[in-house]
Amino acid sequence: MSFSSFPPGNLGDNSLDEFGEEIRRRFDPLYSPMHRDVPESKLVIYTPSKKVSQLQVKHPRTGSIELDIPTVVVSIDGACRGNGTPSARGAWGVYFGPQSPHNANGLLDPSFPQTSNRAEIEALLQALNIIQRDVSKDMSLIEIRIKSDSLYLVRSMSEWIEGWIENHGRNDEGRPVKHYAALKGIHERLDEMEYGDDGGLDFKFWHVPRERNREADELANQAFDS
Image 1 (cartoon, one colour):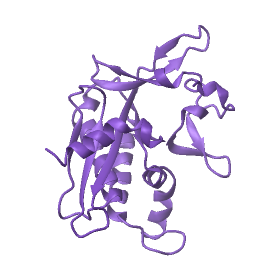
Image 2 (cartoon, rainbow, N blue to C red; image 1 turned 120 degrees about the vertical axis):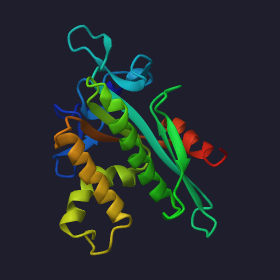
Image 3 (cartoon, rainbow, N blue to C red; image 1 turned 180 degrees about the horizontal axis):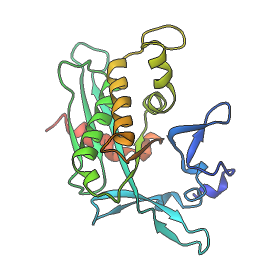
C-alpha cells in the first residue's frame, strides 16, 4: 500500500482537528508530503549505526526513498492480565527496533493502578526516560515520533491535556480525568525536553492499528514471564 492513495493534507506532518487546525503534537504520514508517498513497508526502517528506527521520505525531485535523518520512531505499548480483577497485573514495553539496546520492558509498579491505560502511560514515561538518558546524546536525532495503538493516549497527549490543565484536571463534562497527575507530568516533561535549557527535541504522537505495534506489545507481554 502507498500513502499516495489518500488525499493530500497540509504542508506539515501534523493531523488536523475537527476544525481543520493542525494538532501540534500529532503525526500522521497521510498529512505529510514527504512521507505519504512512501510505501508502508518502507516507511520505518531500523538504522543499526544509530540503534533506533527511523522514518524514510520520498525525495521531491528524484523520487528516491531516503532516510529522514533527524527522526526516531519509538513504539510503546501496555498490557494487563486480569484487567478489571483484583489480581490484575500490568506491564509495559518500549521498542526502538530489532536488537536495539534501547528496547525495554517491565512490570507496572504495584503501587499504581493495574490497568491497561496506566500501563500505556508507563510505557510512554519509560520511553521518555530512555530518550533523555541515552538517545538524545546523538544530537542529530531530534524529531521523536512516538507510535502507539492507544488512541486515548495519543489524543490525551496531543489534543486534550492542555484543556484538562485549564480545567484543573477535569474533562469537558466536569468529571475528573483518570491518571491526570501522570499525564500532566508527562506533558510538562515534554515541554521541558522541547523548550528547556537542555531541550531542542520535537515530539509527535502517531496512532497506528494494533497489528502495526506488535513488537512493543510482545515486549510488554514478555515482562510477565521474565
